[in-house]
Image (cartoon, rainbow, N blue to C red; front, side):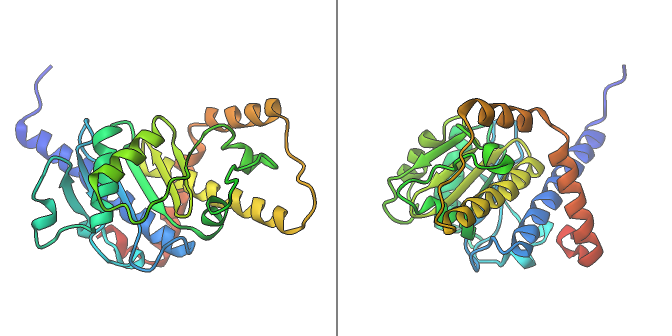
Length: 255
């Protein structure tokens, strides 16, 4: 079999990274569309190298609704000068996402948000997502909890601490703070974020009735969570459909 030329290989790699940029930019636009954003704060990142050390992230203080594929920063976790450059990322973003990518190579796409319902649940003394329906059951025994908020995540030490707490989980409820989602792709991370916020909305509404929750048995909740995990195609279609909606409204994210 003939070897690919370096030029062809570079072109393939370039196309792959551009598609990563487009997907991540779409996730920002969708977060704005669903009102998950926090003004010009919060951050998403996506690893572009096998070891996770090279990654894309949103530029400092740019509103999610205006982010384009070409705007995304290309960063490296070992670059000690990253915060000294004119286009330096937000310090909290660098401290959190940089350390997570360094410690958790399986966390290809990392989403950090303060969406209203998930943040409300994360702010409770008991932030457990109790399995009261199919959406909440998706996260049964699959969530990490950080109840040791000490202020802004603006140091490598804080980023490393959160990475240890996250471990091999995909979801973290960050007490007094927000949520963290880690996944293999932008499509999966977006889908997890979407259903996490829907699950927390259902739980908040149930709490608001003042009535006793009808919580599933552990067996039923676990079976339901496994059924969610077994479907490796729906989240891809979900994200593809959402990008199609974006395309019909405003394609500028893909520029």
